[in-house]
Length: 397
Ligand SMILES: Cc1cc2nc3c(=O)[nH]c(=O)nc-3n(C[C@H](O)[C@H](O)[C@H](O)COP(=O)(O)OP(=O)(O)OC[C@H]3O[C@@H](n4cnc5c(N)ncnc54)[C@H](O)[C@@H]3O)c2cc1C
Image 1 (spheres, protein in one colour):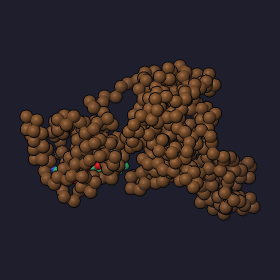
Image 2 (cartoon, protein in one colour; image 1 turned 60 degrees about the vertical axis):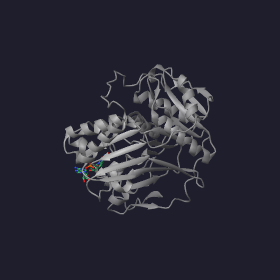
Image 3 (cartoon, protein in one colour; image 1 turned 120 degrees about the vertical axis):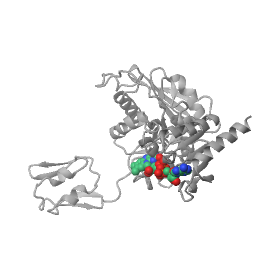
Image 4 (cartoon, protein in one colour; image 1 turned 45 degrees about the horizontal axis):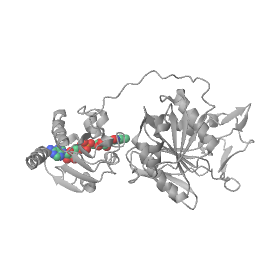
């Protein structure tokens, strides 16, 4: 679609200029000027009372630029020499997508003295690793990271660029997408390839988790997306021991940016991070009081697991937010997930869908959690959980 102006009808009232979400409309005297970047969204057409604006089919579809040469990139997030788990998960997923497109996978390391992490990226699925080392990249600061990744993507031109939807990814990846003038789908939970159109299908929950939206970037490159940690699977077997390391000299980091790194304040974390736990015992409003979480801690301890919670339990102040699982909390993928006194709202289920085996304990036989549970125990949690604890203790002598 394209935006057209009937100048003879335009009164120069400026309502369209105010309504334009992209700020591309302006008035020169009474003449309306359409600047670069108009997406033909139609917001201006809706507010034009004079009927001076309309959307029309462009003459033929706008041509898609030639496919860029450099395959799939995964931003390799690391902190103090430790790769974020989502990086390894995304490399596993990138391998699957790369198989469909017949392109290579590259990891992108930004930091100061980070080249030693390259072998880990090769094992996780990368054919090639770009390494940009600079003192300005020693700690995460949005400006230098945006400048560095933008410069590298503009120079080497990946077809797809993926990153984790972590605090780091959420902070700077949208700025990279804006600088490259391409689209970005945030917080994806599934990817696929439309081979015919050679498009990355980017799926994420939308409208409060009530629908899954599949989004495409049909006209610009790279096709960019951030992905939820804990959703995608790492490769089961190491991919390679070595590969091509490409050191990159950056020209965009010469000037000091407006922000400086001051220091890090460590978050008070749960003993075993939820994202790494193979067993999670999670509690909801059914626990009724903060002190009853002790029961879950006891069960989790016996099973070598961690304690999670619903938003209802967190909002009640029974357990810190770092334990919250779900759409606005963490996404987890344990081998065993025990849901105790949890109804199974869609927003909670969004965070546990990758669990291997789900056990639900709830006194309401119609609770939605039973629809996703592999084993459902209908009854009072205050009887079932102590009985479970006693049985495990007895079993272990
Ligand atoms: C935009 C948005 C984002 C959200 N994000 C999240 C999120 O990230 N995570 C999340 O969890 N929620 C989230 N929510 C909230 C979500 O909709 C639910 O309200 C919440 O998950 C319900 O928590 P619950 O299961 O603990 O409580 P309830 O729905 O109240 O369920 C309590 C359950 O306990 C059972 N029960 C009670 N007593 C006992 C007993 N003695 N023995 C056994 N069972 C018992 C009841 O039968 C009931 O099924 C979000 C909501 C919105 C709108």
